[in-house]
Structures are given as structure tokens and as C-alpha cells.
Image (cartoon, rainbow, N blue to C red):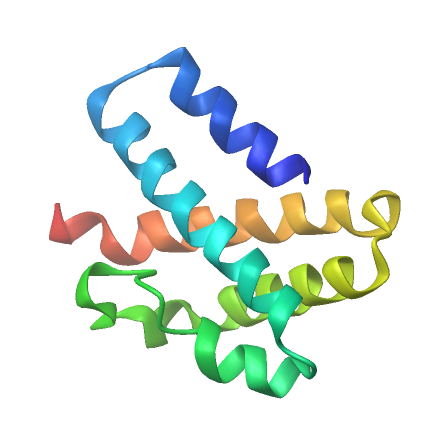
Length: 111
């Protein structure tokens, strides 16, 4: 998955403590989401279990980011069920960029 490769590259570049730590946490979340997608038969079941896996501290503000998170979960679910990385990888990266931008805008004052 292109997103996992991207997050691993951010970690290995070690561009800064905050960016590296966020990438580590994101990598854990994305890997967890992938595992959930593999083990759930329906997207609805995945959404129920995948929305609150620590996207924000204590998931207290995850609801503010739920639209891109749900889009990401849907795309990861579809990728895992079809195995068609060529079809979904770029779409997942676009969703990730939107999620990351919204997260920074929404949560920057919490830092």
C-alpha cells in the first residue's frame, strides 16, 4: 500500500520529532485499519470498529475529522477486498492528503 510506504519514508527521513512521531502513530492506525478491513465482511462493520481507533487523542475530536476518515476507511476496505492496488492507491493518497490538511487546520490549536 502506497500510504504505508509513504509513512515509513517520513519516519525514516526523521525530519523532526513531531512529524516523525505523528507518522509513527499514523502508520499504526493505518495498519490497524488494514487489519480491520481484512477481518470485516461489510464496510458498515468496519466503519463501526475503525472510526475510533485513536485518530485523535482519546478520540475526543475524531468526529470533526470523520468525513475524510470514512472515505479512507471505504477506500482501504475496497482495496483489501479487491486487492487492486493500482485502482485504489492513488485515491487513498488523495484522501490522506485531505485528511492530513483538515487535521492540521482543525487540531493545530491543540498543540
